[in-house]
Length: 441
Image (cartoon, rainbow, N blue to C red; front, side, top):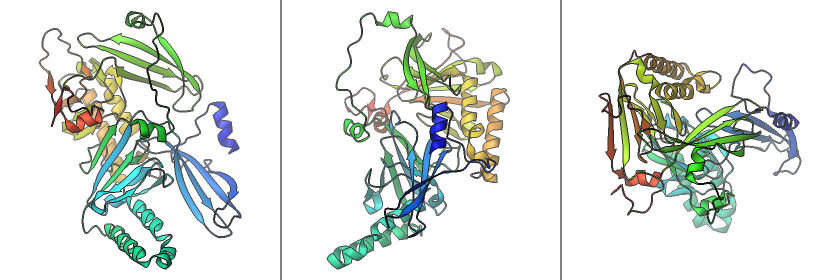
């Protein structure tokens, strides 16, 4: 534990990506009490990162006296601004091998069996779908001997249900797995990344006040009074600054915030954080206005390398689609960004290829690596103007923008469509009032 504490004090990032090349990277060992035999055992702690996800702490306990063992994970990241829900149609035995991070705040459901594991009843785990089923079976079997003596009828019913869970692994019938996590810190692997996974649906939602309370977040009962002199005009001419912590090393940092007006569009809020300790930089953009009455779908036919210089605003509710690559980047991925088309394409390549531990190290396999590297090459071809593709920004909140270089005249390669949101999209945006403009039953 001292090594972890020392890194934190120095502002270094103690979380390392999994790699077989790092021989010096060892788990931290701590002597701790065994809760089975009450003798001393050993806990090992490993701080690492999950591809397309975030930092986690893996802990493993083993007792040499009674040979009891236990493993669990904890999220080392912050509680996200929105909750997340993964709905997976499990159709084959290959789906059972998908990696899953289940935070302790997540609820797991299998609707076909009317089965639910409530939040905070299990420790967080890094496993597979098959591992989740095995863990559920193990938990139900744990007290069966005592149940059989106290109430044989109940024990028989639980035996029947345990057999149903075991039968799921034979894949005689498809079933649905739902993992809903208000903290936003759970994860289900997409094995065909960067392509869209047709079997997996990922939605984000606004937490309720009750969920905020369970997560230990203090809900604000009322808005604070706006200080005198902080009107809209003064905000346009001033860079505001507030204290925060670095998302990489957790050292104290400062975030700058500025209200910026985009020509032919609207005002946005740009936030930038620079960490003096580790040098990590982030920037994020949020819409300065409310959710629009209609969603917006912007389609650009990329015909020339000069298109890469177009200014682009991608809100955190916007999906990015490139049909020719069968690629879709879901809502909230990469967050909000104000950049150029080239900048966003490079960020997409970094997310799926350059910074993806699945491409190298212990987690890699040849087929996946070749597919992701080929995808990165195609992104480079688009940036160089060597591929004729459609680039689509689909934002149900209507708060995204792509520059019209012919403004105020129409752009022959750019189309902007307004559409009525579906009920599910209103749910994702936290618009639960069915009288809201843009609701489509």
